[in-house]
Length: 302
Image (cartoon, rainbow, N blue to C red; front, top):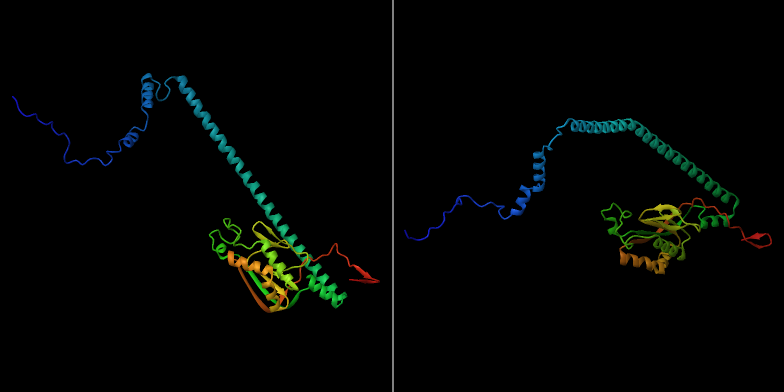
């Protein structure tokens, strides 16, 4: 019987939608056959030869039991040693902590004694200077920083740039990404202080620290030290001198223009004001070891 060729029957289910992961055959194959076929064949071979699972001979079972006993013994001994050593380690830690605390207490007591002795020595030095010296000696004591002073002057405040304070690192001294531009450095403070001296300041202090001819301004890491005492911004400088004239002379000086450039270029804060009266404390530990009065004539010194 001749006729038109018939189409093969459609075996697909018309009502069944295709799988969404039909195009992910490689990934499906990896997930469905995560274990390589070689491993499966090796396991089947071992099972066929009778080598799968636990050993069947008495000797093999004895070796397995011995291995398990040895492993349990090692774990037990280790746990016992750790348990025995724990109190000893804890006791040693407690003793070390106690030694540290005792050392800190002794250091604090010694520091208080040193501070007390320094205060006593400074007081006796000032008392001797006032008692045995003349008016000239008193002026010398004020200029050298051995005596506290007061008088008209100026107040100069220098501070780090604002963006160093608003950083997420916690504070202006904790920012490590700032490239030495908006932060006041020791050499900046040195120039400002020297500019005030050159402009006619008779006495000067920074953050309450009296400056003398023996004072040093230097850096230790990110901190600025004045006579080995760390300072934190803002840096407040009080200078005794002829008020408005001192302020004008400093702002017109090279160091004043340097401070102005820091403010304009790097955002460093700076403000100066004339004060009717400023009070400066005496400088601590003012001890002269090398200098001696120079003979200028018969029975006289300078």
